[in-house]
Length: 113
Length: 110
Image (cartoon, rainbow over all chains, first blue to last red; front, side, top):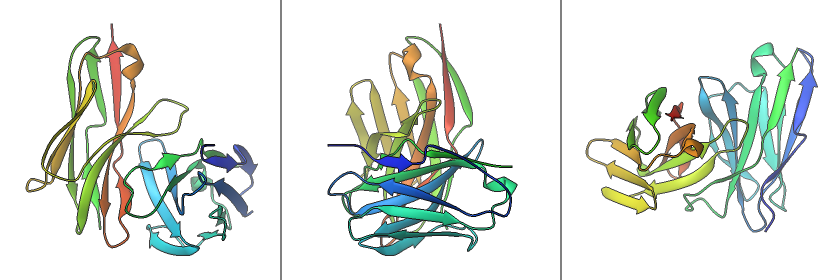
């Protein structure tokens, strides 16, 4: 089976712009979670989608949003980018919400200048 | 909300044993997981504990005490390739949200 894929792998944006990141989960996995990783902050939970519905949400401002499509692929969007949004954005999938093992993609490195 | 605490850095000698502790506060606890992340890589799953006790997988073991809200990851016969960051994570709540700690950077020295 192919692993979790994320596109693009690297992105440079300017403050005030918006960005959309994409994640394709492992085939058959219906749950997709998004995390922001910055040095010293670990992996901070953004949100989780299951069957096209947001099931869990972290403590991020409304500028961060996401969605999931019927094929389980997910996108996350960040509007009005700030310098502090520079981070590695990781996507993880699991078969369903009861599965405890998450499979991570390689991440998208976002740099905001 | 959830909170997890683990040491930020640990240094250990090749061939030795190291223990990485994790304490957590959460409601609706389901289980505690451990992930390994090498620099520049993605986190990979190591282990999961839902019940009290020790789970062993090769050189790695993980322990959980639900009453103490505490767990640890034990790495034996350390190898240089074990140098990485290790994250504990709790699964909690109705949809078993997974929340990660800030990670412990393990450096294995010769």
